[in-house]
Length: 489
Ligand SMILES: [Zn+2]
Ligand SMILES: [Zn+2]
Image 1 (cartoon, rainbow, N blue to C red):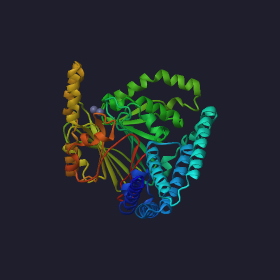
Image 2 (image 1 turned 180 degrees about the horizontal axis):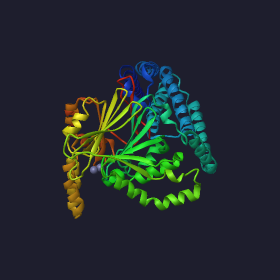
Image 3 (image 1 turned 60 degrees about the horizontal axis):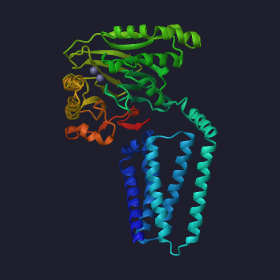
């Protein structure tokens, strides 16, 4: 009976490996997020279709053959392959540092290894209980020694780990690894509502060698550095509007850029009329800190002329088809257009065009026909989203515990944001290729909640939809139609 169950589980492992092989072979682009990789053109896709699919097919073949015929030898082969994969992964944790998605992959691999190992032992023609017992004792002793060593030498091992992590991550050159094209990194996918995993709104747009930041929500400078995009490399910051959640991190972002590369010019801050007030306010608020930084680190490191920001305002007309080309540089065109965020005025979205690739960032807006016009045919539309059914639940809860102001705010906010269903309808009408939600309201601590947040959106937009998290990198290589996604955090 145990043998049958284990053969069944081994067979299921084989089917899982077979499915992974098939998806790598037939839909390699869809596996990029799964494996956190970015292919280098057709050669990269060929690697996924060939090397990765081949590895999975081989393991699946051995696992399925072993499960069907009851052969322990066949079953042991994928187990050995997976053991080497786990070894490599563990080495990566020590040398490169760990990540949540790598830990999840490790957990799945360990489960399959255990299933295959147990099935292999159960199917042996001549069981050798003595050998198995000695093997398990040896493994147990090794585990005890490893655990004890990690406790006794924790300080020393911690220093080695910290040094290795620094060596690998301190000067991460993400930008140098990106192919020429348009890239967008979510340095903040959240909204004003408290979210343990999402910073305030922020999208880093990389066009060729230039880096632009759209909105600077709370905590976004730190998130940007974690993603391997040095704040010192920022060319300019663009603001969509001046709600606090979109500017709360502006001071920090300007400080990090100044000190990050000893800039001698203030950070250009591009925005609609009113940006002068915001920048002047931050410059004033950080004027004492500026003095401290220069006194402590010296003028060579912190040039006095490079602190703070310089406002670069443009004029946009409310409630009209008003737009402005706000920047043209090295093949990149950034166009601002008016959106509907009443009573907030001005409020704009931005369109980026670079070498035939394009993206639009909605900023905060109610459903906007103007946005649909400027988003027409773009590769990716980054749109805000507010799910009214979920916000209504928060309102109901706030009323229930007597928090009248919170209930009132929840009742008010749907009027100047967009339901995911409306954004999907708009994306379909504009024929965008991919829709990415950011500035999600309410917070979505579990990916399981994404379906509730999206509601009927997948039915209304025929293309792919992504609910973004901080660290998502969307890549649009020049000279291709590829839309690649990977998690940097
Ligand atoms: Zn907002
Ligand atoms: Zn807003």
